[in-house]
Image 1 (tube, rainbow, N blue to C red):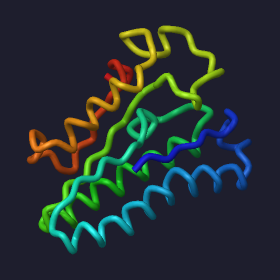
Image 2 (cartoon, rainbow, N blue to C red):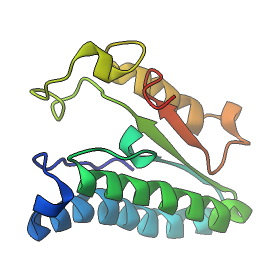
Image 3 (cartoon, rainbow, N blue to C red):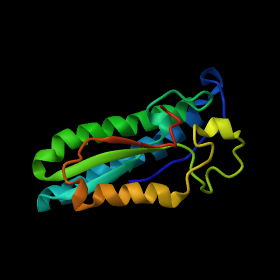
Length: 156
């Protein structure tokens, strides 16, 4: 369950409502709708695994990206709630919180190596995909409601 848009950096007091609504709609409501409809199907089959994508900004503040941080904090909350509500039905729900990842969305965002955390680089998408592959595998059958950072130590 992966959706995300950024907004132009702005102080909270300068963030316009339309931009805030768009970020919340895509990032948080999009995750909610994905959960809403797939959980019904998984509940009927009494099994399933969902991995939501939040962000390092979902577990800490993010200066100048308040709407984004709020939306990703919300994804973490939805994940934990779904894990509790649907665990008894054999459905596991976890959330990953990547830091910077080399994607089209991060192209053009200037940052110094120090801003990328102790490893001083962005993640390769395959590094994130490998964690997701583990979470959906039988080896992670007891992992439910987990918040997994994939951020090179950024939030340490």
